[in-house]
Image (cartoon, rainbow, N blue to C red):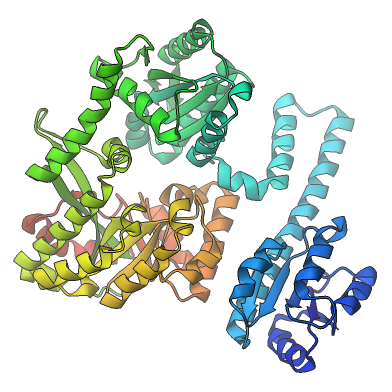
Length: 609
């Protein structure tokens, strides 16, 4: 394989010598130019894999050179890293087409990390091109021989397309069902409702909840559950046709965007879905399971203003359908009284306000067990539940967090959780001594509160709890990444002595530079993503790449959804430090008795690891 080539452009020879020396361990082939004009001459002879470009140079500046190169189709995708000593240059560098930056005076570790990232990316793209060429040849052979069945040919074409679009596919698709994921669905709906009035295309949102998925998943195992989801997705795709946009929202929930403004058309599709699922029997290990579905339908018209609004309307319809017995088709009718609609949405707000006022929330916890490290106390994550006094039952976060965020109550709920965890530790000194750390989730909304760190400090002091007992988990979202003050708030929390972890890493808006720029102590690899490693080479490669970067940054990893010993052993062999899931511990109320039982069960974690 050809050596990775780096072109250094700098008018100061000493700077070039320093960069040459730093790059020696990476075995790069280095070319140099002492001016932008000289660099243009070199680029006529060879195309490097990366350019390290100084900003301030006599004659043509680095910014001018970058603009010129981006206009040339040969260099559109050529990675360019600016080398600058002025922070003001950073934003301008990105604006003219730069991919990254290195600050002066030059830090060797920073240069190596940034260049190595592009080196690894270049290797991956080269491998993908090679695999794609091989796949194209195989497809030509199959077509010429005319001996491959339609199913095998489709698999080959799918494999070819998968390899070509791998990076994009990983970010937008669910690997089990091969449908789009929630992020892609949100983008699709946002684009739809953001269209100009004259270009707006009405559509219907069809929400499909499978009725007996959990029975199959828990009685036959994850592989059976995944196969059921795959067959269900295939059925939905066949019935709804190529014009529909299909996505998997969660474990047993699918969504379809059907482009039409005719209710009778979508009603025909919905009724056909309902009938097919009512007749569908899933077979596994000589056992048959009847699989039904509850279907909720919401019209997306020009009165809809957000993706959250669509989800809320669909949730209202689904909730109503399931209360009526489920396995039916129900609509969010335009004939409903507007006041009743508004009151129905406000009920969630009132319920959450009352829950905060009358302490209807409950703190649950789940233990986090070591896979490769020695035990140094019990680690756990605090989980929130909502008590429903009318039905004397519990409501899980998936059912109410969307409303908490919509009505701007999520920050109050996060503060409630912080206070309750500290209160428990304060009133139970024995447990506080034996619990090494409790993780608490913080929402993006909460992290926009400039007084958050003060509240945490005041609460810790009030209940005399050591800051190192708390770890705050932050789920990667676009809102967090693009809020400038998020990093400073996290830094203040970290300065208190608390730990910071990034949750669900591996999906969404994840970025390796994100790990470097924010003060995270731990990385929690997305569980739904990670558990695919047993039957997906792509998932295994992505988890391994996350782990490799985490090792370089000296950040321990926690993997979620460890649901059996086989997965635990697999993660252990990969070098992942911590595991969390039903295999080790099912969530239970945070109480003295339950924590004590957890402490006595701690030997189980050590044996499993």
